[in-house]
Image (cartoon, rainbow, N blue to C red; front, side, top):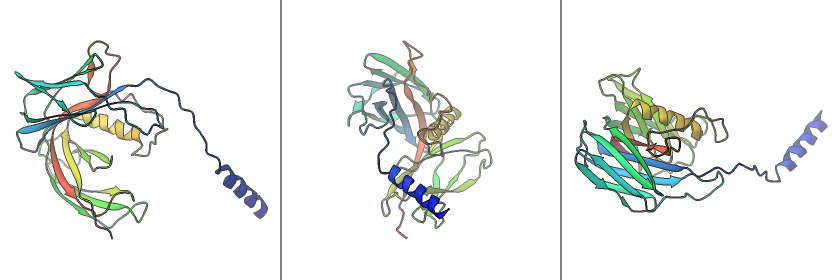
Length: 266
């Protein structure tokens, strides 16, 4: 029996020496639109931030940003042109964001017109984020203990962005109008002694559901990049000429609160 185990160990050892190349099918490049109009909680002036890219091969190390696009925002009798700064990043500031206004984002990319219309979703503020001492998988993890107080009306949805592609979604089914306290765990690669911006955004049910699917597809909840997709990740941005040739991504109009969290080396 000992000899058999030794032989199997050798087989496993030597089999790991050679790299395994997995050939993945080449797929057509899709347009990806990540667009957000946000204002601070209880503020009046907002900022439009749009990032335009195309999908890339799984093993690609570069992001194919879309440059030279026409990006504009329209509401009431006002039209605002977004300006491209870094390649693929478009921005417009000092936008009057009111609750009852409908905001239409228009984009012209490679001759194709895309549009999406949304209204403002209100949010609440982050009460506190403190560092805890608990871990789940590794002693190198960082526990961030988050507290925020839900808005009093039932049916609020929130997205939290903890930085470094760490996202969290929640709804107020069990804590309506009360303070929520929960722990979020950063992995061992989270930098210590580095101020990190954490964002809390109020969102509608459609974007909440979209983010649930996105997090699942990205593997953050254990799905992994090779897991079977649960559904088509279609957002709210339309291609007027060809509805079936829709882009990936989403346009949302939100209130957003910011909290600076700095983890200390234990």
